[in-house]
Length: 132
Image (tube, rainbow, N blue to C red):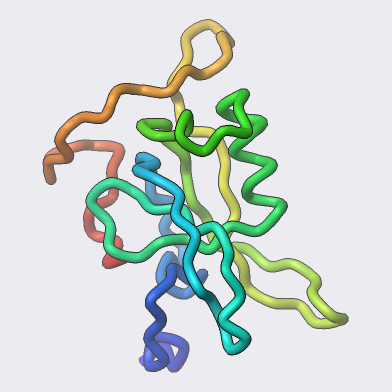
C-alpha cells in the first residue's frame, strides 16, 4: 500500500501519477479556494479528468512557453505531458508535478492548440488508466 494514497485530495498530486506520464488535453483554468488558508489560486483542468492541477508559477510559465500565450482561454485543447518529480521547498525536497510538451507540431514548428475532440478510451497517447 502506498500510504500517500490514503490521504485523498480534490486536486491532482504527484502520487496520483506515480511513474506514469499521461498526455492530457487542457480543458480550462478556474480560480478555486485552495489549502488551509483557502487562498484563491488558478487550477488547471483536463478533458476527461476529475481532478485539477493547482497551478504554480513554474507550471504556468511552462504552459505559456509551450502555447505562446498567457491568456488561459487560449490554452483550451492544448496537449501536455504531466510527470512527477521533486523540487526544493522551504529547505526540504518535496514531490511535485511538472509539465512538458506533447507532440503537436511538425518539423519543429511551434505547437498550436488542437481542437477539442471527444475523448475515447482507445486513444494510444491518452492514459485513461490514471485515476484523476
